[in-house]
Image (cartoon, rainbow, N blue to C red):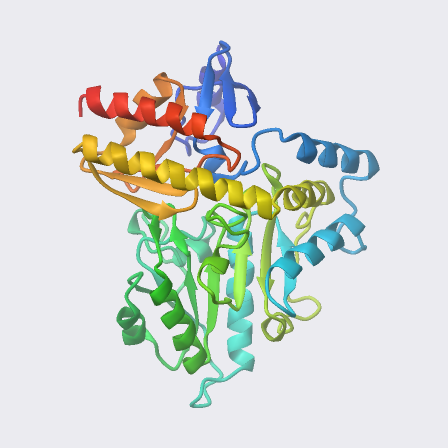
Length: 399
């Protein structure tokens, strides 16, 4: 049996895999088992932001492997403590961090923290029984039962009901839709600054500023899920830096350790100190090898690195807009930094398949949106190559 047949026999059928067997990946490129080279504009779902097998990240992980791989969170690990310090310093004053393994876990931590905080911090009317969290239609927060309950897409809920209660949904970029559903039991608002799985839909700056003020007025926590759009992808290390506001809690994962499993939940001091001994934990959260890799990522992502990614992102947006004018099948280009969506008038999966045949790796989400999440190290030459392939496919493909 070949590898595809073996996978089909022994694996649960949870992934609709592309017809690609990976042999090697380096920087912005992937090679298959036959030696064919692909330009990767997906980065493992916004994971390998500093490129596949980045030399500094690999070196840091290998060095930590030589020291120890796991000792548990019952002991102090210098590499973990250093990473926590660096992340908090880049976030907001007085914050605290909790490490987990994934984005869903980071969001679970945020949900638990918010609900305990709601019990200890009453509403303005004195209600201490606060647990309801406002989320948004088309959001995606993870695949555990709690984070699926917070996800505003019914297709992820099928066959899993009853889900966890007391998550309600508003419309992104519509502050009135938030105000209509707030009540005395509301404790927090949870939002992705850019909805990735929901079709690459950015929250606008005015809306987020109004949302921050609304949360302050109502004594609610504001939670930013930056799992897909964080760690430099929007041109800032944290996506919230683009909006001149601070959330009370920010979650991250995916690209934090550039391919190794690591999630983090960062909360302001007052909120973070709601958790005390025994309230939360994780066996593998903050694994030292992952933390070493993440520290290397942070060293790479200095101001010069982010500035260059912004320049390439602008160039990519310009080229995509030029392409939109030439290809009537494109409805809209949207996004921020290097998280971009090409909204089509047709289903986009065939486009993804045709691009793969021509050596370009992209993704389709929300049925009609081509999602571009390239490593932040791409060049203008890479953009030109991707645009050429997209142009050819969109011109010649049979829809």
